[in-house]
Length: 114
Length: 114
Image (cartoon, rainbow over all chains, first blue to last red; front, side, top):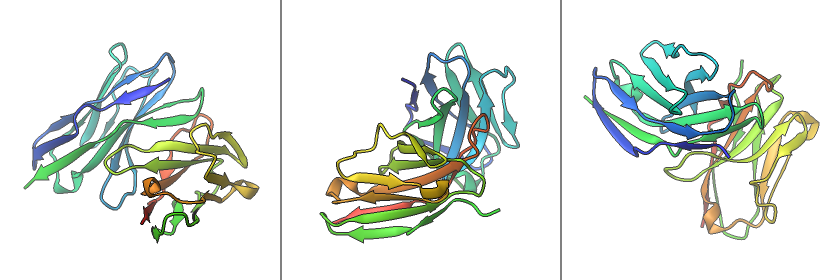
C-alpha cells in the first residue's frame, strides 16, 4: 500500500524568507504523480504544484518549487519569498493510475511571521 | 466554470440522528471522491466513483455510512445513525479521470455530533 509521510507537524517562516516542507512516500509503482495541496482555514483544498514521476525536471510554479528525489522517494516543497497569505496547512499527496486513489500525508501547519 | 459545490457547509446534529451531505462535481468530471478529514489530519478516502459506479468503497463503514451517485453527476453521502466520533469535515472532490489526475475539492461540510 502507498503511504505518505510528513514528519514535521508545524513550521514557521519569516515573511520574505524561504521555507522547505518535507515529504516522503512509499510505493512499489513506477508511474505515479505527486502533489502539494494548500488548505487555508476556509477548508478549500487548493492545488499548489504537481510532479509526474516520469519527469526528471523538478516542477516550478512561481514562488513554489519542488525537489523530487525519486530514488529516495522524497518530495519537498520550497516556498520562496514567503507571504502572509501562504500561512495554511500543506498536504503532500500521492496518486497512481493503478487505483486512482489520492493518498494524503498528515499535513504540516505553516505560519508566516510578519 | 463553477467549482465543486458542497452543502451544507456546517451541520450540528444529536447522536443517533441521520445526516446527509450533498456534492455537485465540476461538469464533465467522471471521477468523484468523498474524503473524511479529522481535525489536524489529512483527508482519508471514504469512497470513489467512476461515473455512477462505486469502484472503491473499501474504507466506507458500511454499517452506518452509505453513498450514491445517481446518473453519474451529483452525489449524496449519508450517515445513519451518527456517532460522536463522526464529527469531522467531509470533503468532496472531482476529476476528469483517466490520466488527468488533478482533483478539485469543495469547501467541505463540517459535521458536529453532540
